[in-house]
Image (spheres, rainbow, N blue to C red):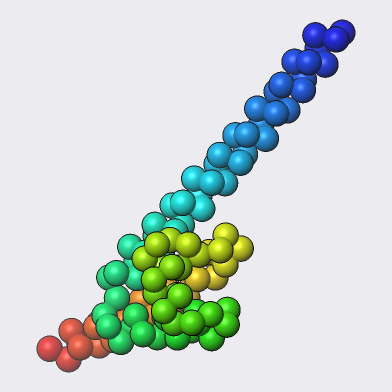
Length: 104
């Protein structure tokens, strides 16, 4: 029975490691998505994103730009909200472009 307890313990540790690994991969992918999506924005939209994130989290615009976006150092707990801010601004940008296309 001691071997069963050891086996159970090892399986439990393995599951914890896999869960942590998956979480790390998801976090890394989200950070890459933040940078990738941000780089596709026009300059005005980039400014909006920087200001919104700066205002929401009380950090400087330079910190948002240099650390959070370009270096991918967004605090883990803020990744979903930061990604949502960028997506929202990107969607507005797409709508504005679509309006221009419709006029043509």
